[in-house]
Each structure stands twice: as structure tokens, then as C-alpha cells.
Length: 85
Image (cartoon, rainbow, N blue to C red):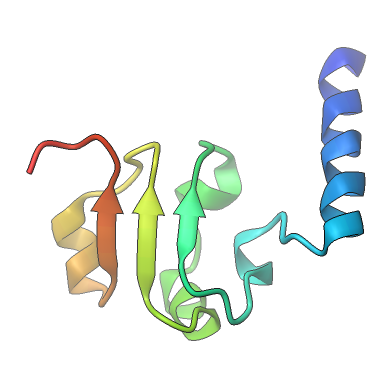
């Protein structure tokens, strides 16, 4: 388990040093949300809150966690990276 915890702590220190958000709801006034991991926080966020935190309701999803039609219904411009058009 230690080999898993150490990289997370390093990530936290780096994010803190550069002022980068580690959690979805910390992305206040971001131009868009870019999902590059399948962490639990990204799999089931409160989309109503996420939408209020972003400057623009735009999501680029590199893991294809969500259905484009569902995201459109929620009011997001959604781009599933690598999905067929």
C-alpha cells in the first residue's frame, strides 16, 4: 500500500506548489474540465455544482466516463476523447 500512497502525496505537494486543483469542485473559474483519470471523484461528481464552478460548461473526457447525450441534457458541451463521431 505504501508504494501507492507515496505518489499521491507527491502529487498533492506538486498540486499545492503550483496551485492546481486535485478535486473537481476546486476547479473554480476554470475554462473547462479535463478528465484524465478514473478516480472516484470524477466518476460521480455533482454536475449541478460543477457547472456553477466552471466559466464555461465544457468537459473534455479522456476516459469516456459519461454518455454524450446525458451530458448534453445536463447542459454541458462534452467531448469524449477518442470516441467515434
